[in-house]
Amino acid sequence: MRTALAATLLAALAVPARADDPCAQETLALCNKAVGTNAVLGCLRGNQEKLSPACQASVSELSAIAEEYGGDCQADAKRLCEKVTPGQGRIARCLVDNVSFVSQSCQAAINKVGLIRSQIASGCAGDVAQHCRMVPQGAGRILACLREHRDALSGSCKDVLKTLP
Image (cartoon, rainbow, N blue to C red; front, top):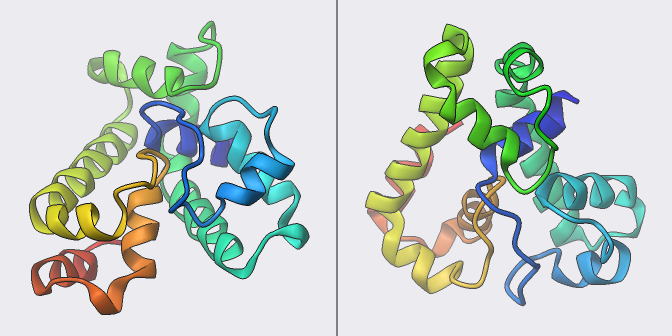
């Protein structure tokens, strides 16, 4: 639940896998019935032994990001969003819509995710366009893509990545 909640927090919308996504083939072959970022991530984690090394690394990184932010909002999601159907960023939207009523730790997690997104947007826009343009947004995929290409990134983007968890 904690990882799923965190992935939901990080995902704005579920979008299909694309060619530059390191898990595109695995998503289509193993998880084509999974709907939403949480379901796809859960499916890929359940099929870890069948994934390519690049996809395994991506799933591992996404899971770590999800774990880091998930616990902070778990109780708030249960309390404020219990009637919301999980998937496609609906719980994240519920938490953001109710940000005035979430705990300080959840509010801090929401703010941190927003800060990370804005830091990437300001310091890495060119790098995202060059290296990650086909990677779907949400669930930390752009961050994982940038880290996969860290040696080829601009100085400003490398500086941004140094400051991120």
